[in-house]
Length: 269
Image (cartoon, rainbow, N blue to C red; front, side, top):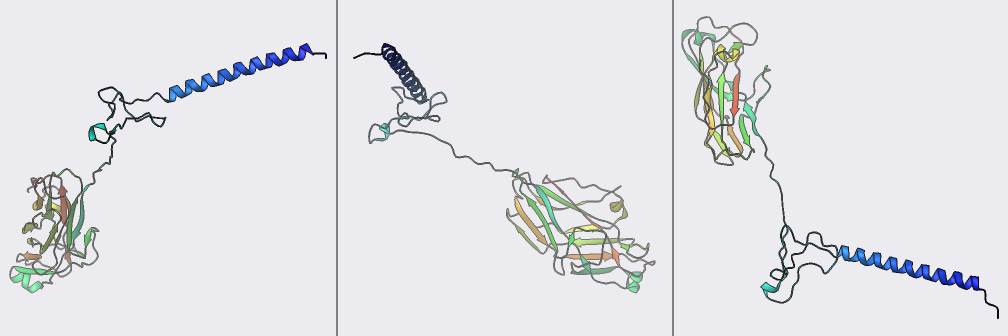
């Protein structure tokens, strides 16, 4: 029997290569396995059950069975971990959401020429106007979702009553506002009954006469707050005797200013 020594030698060399390659593969896998089994678990003899610390914990365990040990049925033998539940509360705004329009009773030229005249609230539907914020529901609303509990203050002022068709004006008039119903999620008191003097200075902004109407003390005012001006007692306008009165529809601007402090200093003429 003739042996091919070259073939035998080649076979032996190939087996040696494969053997070394196999050893290399197993050693590499072993190294990877040992690396994966390296965990940050507090497994000291005095704290093998957890919970973890900043330096040693089970947040990155990649191999099952490498965490804290439960070695018995008692609480002291239990494996203990600590994780976190979290959420964020984001702030909102302090907002002026509604301001009311006010429709008052009609007055007669003869009456105003001869005496002071008082006209009462009728409803909240006015004719076309240059002011666009007023509502026909009689609602005055402030919402505070800031979360600061700073409180707030709402001030108001009244411009001069002017004829919508001519240059005629009311020389002297005072408007009394009284809220008829108030709701507040934080039990803010109703707006104050306030007397507003109708002046041209309020329209020009040069000598504004603001009145503190509604305030929420520090620690109150959070949530929705609404006052209604919707019955005969809500508004009363007294027009001083005036000889040069002209017929027509008269309108005045109500100015509303909301600030995030419970007590503001109104501007005075």
